[in-house]
Length: 415
Image (tube, rainbow, N blue to C red; front, side, top):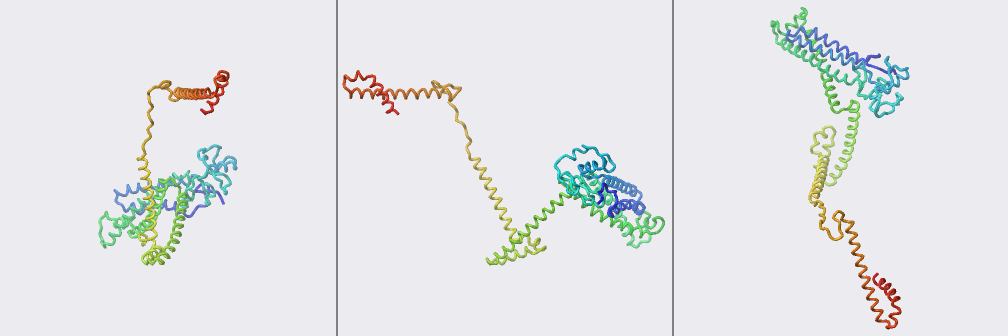
């Protein structure tokens, strides 16, 4: 398959030929079949408006078709293979560096890494940067490079068919209203008179039929282009592409199908339970809501399954709100922590600048003194008891030994 570089490359598409032919036919038809039937005060501004729309549409459509929205990595790859040129243009390394930046993915058709948002178009046989869609009416892919021309192309074309169709609608309606009145004489300013005097051919009915045919074409174009224009306004507001929208819509439809299947299984079980419990009314509404097409919409408000689902959902929301309120009340009832104020009274051995250093040392000194005092009193008591138990002559000889032994015993008793 030949890789397409723009919308003018052959082979041309039939829809593309119709588009360009219609763009040329509308102003020609307006000049020959609408302008002569309009009053002079209306024909000039209407003709100018139509031709301005034609010029804008042609310019934006040409720019959209002539720009190649190919992925920049693929462009550089093809230029390297062809000796530094692609599409008769020189491509240097490092061009469009911003477009080359970002995450990549591998295209199995092109055989290289392309941007993550690029997609391969089977009609153009290339990866398109930020692929939106392939437009058959312009016979080219719409991507990041030419989307800014595609959107005004749709808008200017819609404006063209609106102006053209509005003028034709007024001419056709006024002509057939006057034609149906069966009057033979009209003022020179009437639409019927101007149509009959069209190029002095007295072919007013043929002119009206021609205008009616183009009016029908305009109405069809207004319907299609109006939907397309509003759709792309929505896409621009959501900042997504047409391809991303299609993928997202497919996922939503798949999820809806899964929920419907799950609802169907629940409905079968609920019908059986209602039959066992002897609830004919509930069983009737379950069956009615399960009927395809009609029941799904007409009986939706009284469907027991959906009503139960709403009740469960509301209960869960109430429980969540209740838990949230309880948490808020608990937070309100909590007493804020207030640190105790430190005493500024300075005791003996305490330093006001350090609440733990000198004070702790002083307390330790007092404890040691108390232990020594207690130890001394215990030693004295033990010595007194030993003197009473020993004879007088042995008291002086064994004084030193008595003191040492008594001191050790006193320590043991104290411990």
